[in-house]
Image (cartoon, rainbow, N blue to C red; front, side, top):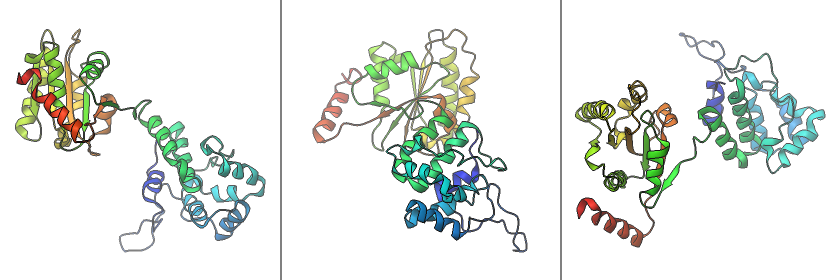
Amino acid sequence: GNLGNAEMDLLLKGAPKALTLKGSGGERGHVAPGYSGDRCSQDVIDKATKALGLNTQQAKHVGDLTILSALKNFGQHVADPSNASAWKKFLEAPEPETEFPSGCFDDKSSSSECTGEVGQKLFKALVIQALRPDRLLTVLEDLVEAALGKGFLELGVMTGGTDELREVLINQCKGHTPLILVSVPGFDPSGKVIALAQEMGKASAVQSIAMGSQEGYTQAERAIASAAGATDGGWVLLKNVHLSVRWLAGLEKRLHSLPLGGQTKFRVILTMEMNPAVPLNLLRVSQRMVFEPPAGVRASLQRSFGTCLSVKRC
């Protein structure tokens, strides 16, 4: 299924001020793609408000939804007395996302870009946002997983030693599947990778590269090619890749094209701070873990002492 631009804009930005595109001379132009050209009448909104006891904000949002071509008849559906009991059940349900009245998304004449299961979930998110915003987070999680894959939001949290990292890196990752370690600013999870490599006797097989410069990009590409071609495989640790968003755009394709053959020990590990500009396709094909530093001064000191007393520093 697909997500429509108009629907996503309404979900994330709210109703636009103008529904038409202006011509070169400033004259009123054609209706922007995905929009109906006008919202439903105030009379329809008033009927829906009276029948269902909508508050001012809910009533406004009902009108906003009808500017979408796919939901241009939504206001009439809500205001229709024959649908009142179904909508009241929806408004009062503890989980309204399971109680949508039938027919509220059935406009077959729509030219919306939203299609399939993903499109339906986006429409549901819009209605939940309008009428039951307390359940929006749950519905958005469902939408994200439908669009980007089941488990996309399930991030492992790395707080302890190297055992959990070993499990993910060795048993869940493959050569074509990088591991992304996400951290808050000021915390570097790359030490965990080095410590694990030392425990496994692979310290010499780890190539660590700081990203963010052209030199780093060149070194990273050479390291990936070298480690992928090594007989017993190697690990490539690319640090601070949030500084190299443009370079990351081609990493997924670069890894997928590697002729690994029977190579099973090659790994690529990326460390990064949270950055919304990181390519979604790369996040989708990667294993992801969040490095969560211990809370409090005492825990922080223990982590620092643990690093100082690691095998590398002894």
